[in-house]
Every structure is written in C-alpha cells, then in structure tokens.
Amino acid sequence: MKKTLLSALAICMIFLASCNKDNNSGNGGTPGGTQTIGAKLSAVWEEEITYREETTDGGVTWHVTETTYGEKYKKEIFTWDGNKLTSIKDYYEGPNYSPVYYDFMYDGEKISEVLIGGLHLNVSYSGNKISRVECYVGEYNDEHVVYTTSYSNNKLSKIDAEIEDDYGTDNQTMSFYWDGDNVIRMVTDGWTSRFGSYDNGNNPYLGPDAMLFFMMNNVEEFACAMSKNNCTDIDFDEGPITYQYSYNSKNYPTQAVKNWTHASWGSNYRTRTVTTYTYEYVD
Figure 1 (cartoon, rainbow, N blue to C red):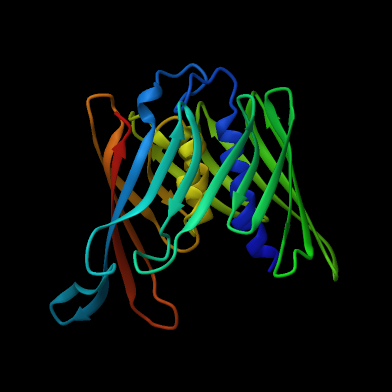
Figure 2 (tube, rainbow, N blue to C red; figure 1 turned 120 degrees about the horizontal axis):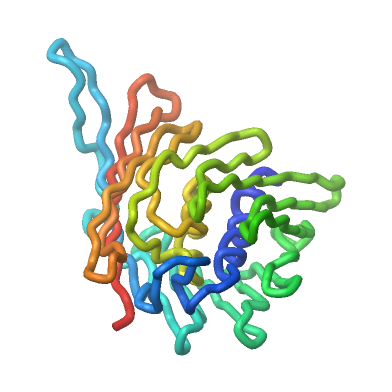
C-alpha cells in the first residue's frame, strides 16, 4: 500500500509544482519559454489497440487482441474559470464507468486545495514554490501522508514522502534530473526511468492541465508533465515507450500516438499497446 501511495499521490506534488514555476505566463508557461495561453485543454479523446506477439516459422507477427471499449471515447473534460483550471472529469476506467472528479481551489492565483474523489490535499508554499502537501488516505482516512519538496536552479529536484499509519512510518523519495527545461531521469526509491529525447513542440501539460497525466497509471510519464517539450521516448523497467505527435499552428499537439511494447504478465510473449490521444483546446 505504501509503495502505491508514493506512485499515486506524489504525482499530485509533481502536478502542483509544475503549476507554480517561476516566470510562468498563464497556463502552459515555462521559464524562458514561448508557450502561450493557447494551451488550455478542453477535452482529450482516447483510443487504444492491443497486439499480441506471435512467433512462427516465418518470423514474428503481431495480432490484434483487444480494442479499448470498441471505439474512441472522450476520456477527460476540463472546466475553466478564465485562466484557472477548476475541475477535470476523468473517465480513466472507460466510458461505461463513473468518472473521477478533480476539483481545484485557489488562494489568489495559487492552488491551495485539491479534491480527488474523497481525497483532500492541502497545499503550502514558500514564496511561489510549493513546500508541502498534506493529506489523509485509506478507507478510514487512517494514513497520514506529508510531501515536502526540494528545488535546484528553480526546478523541482526531489519529493520526500512521509507516510504514517497504525503500523509506523515509512519514508520514500522521488528525485528528478534535468537537461535544460526537460526532465531526463527520475529515480523512485532506487528505480530509474530515463527520458531519452524530446521534440521541439510545446507541452500542453506544463500548466494546470498537467493533472491529465496524473490520472494515468505509469508514474514514469508524470515527470513529462514538468518538461517544456514533448517526450518522444521513455525507458523504464516495464518496457520502452515511444510517442509520435501531430501539431497545430501554435505548435501544440493535436494528436499523440503512444507505442508501448512490454512483457505480458505470466506469459512468454510480448504485448504492444498503441494508444492514440486527440487533444481539443479552448478557443
């Protein structure tokens, strides 16, 4: 449970830190960057196809084994009040399940609280940088989690998590390493993920809509939300991920095709999952 907490909740810290970088210019801003308010997402659609690898005398072939709910569907819906993101409706389990709601409350221009279903995060700052996030989790709110941050050169370098429950206290750490304005490596309690390359496109998740990534299950992808550009390949323990993007005239992605090849649990064959995301923006 405690390992899951670091993966599932520390990502909120990454999100909040990405929302409060120095010199941001509205949503999608980045220190010294050229991104503009045009990055405000209104919706993201998803379509997924899974292939199974089969080896025959003629070589390796791939066969479709599953499609996501049979069709493309609207996965996330964003609500804005001016330039402030106020909520996200996330159908992360699919269109036939109830969505999860993310609600954001502000103290002036800063996010002060985040409600995620029954989870309540309280956010504290040191100047313009987040210093602490506190919440209670568990079925009976019996686990107390406190995240504290460290920064280097105005960029998030470490998140320390202290998780306390009836069995004691556990401490965990996530560390981030940068090349310019892009994260190139993340270490989570000894596990290393590498972000091999970035393109020159503007990353729409850099602002408050970075929470989009935090609804997903792969913590390796969350670090991409802090980067100025769009990551094109990730190397982590469950197999490589590559992305291909299409862009609009403002250099923001209209589509991302994610290709993930990984081992299948309990089997000796590999699986290839191709997920296509289609992005819509506020006019």
